[in-house]
Image (cartoon, rainbow, N blue to C red):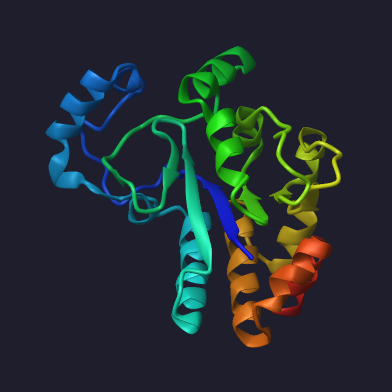
Length: 230
């Protein structure tokens, strides 16, 4: 089974240069190249740049899973409001761009400029199971639904307030990751989805890779796994 996780960038980063990239620096490839050259000493791969709590837990889960099985198992992609869709190994420099606070028109304009919908739709057609760990603004930027084969199972962990953003389709599933789950796991909003994923990875290390097939058949099992490992 081919599996991927799509998560969001975080405001907390490994480096925060005083001249970090701003929204206008992404408006042309020439300007981006020139500004990136100024920040070359801060270059690092995407998975190491982000240091927010969700990403830290997600990364810990992936590292545990990959070390146990001695292979990648899951591919990681990151949605950046500046760079667009990133592979975890893409090299980037510090920037200050976010979807948070944009009105609907601004958000869609940025999403369209980054070609997020088309790029992610094309990407996920190559996977059997895709886990989305995103907040509401990032889900809106996806402009769902994705018209992909029903064999591509899409699971969105997101708060109940954003339930209406997830299409009611056979291959698209909503798994509530909001206040109720946060209280049960004694954690914070910024940590919750990453923590759930980390616990899922630990469970797979104990119980075997067949867990992913069971989750594909019944996505709500993710909650059982998270709560069983408190």
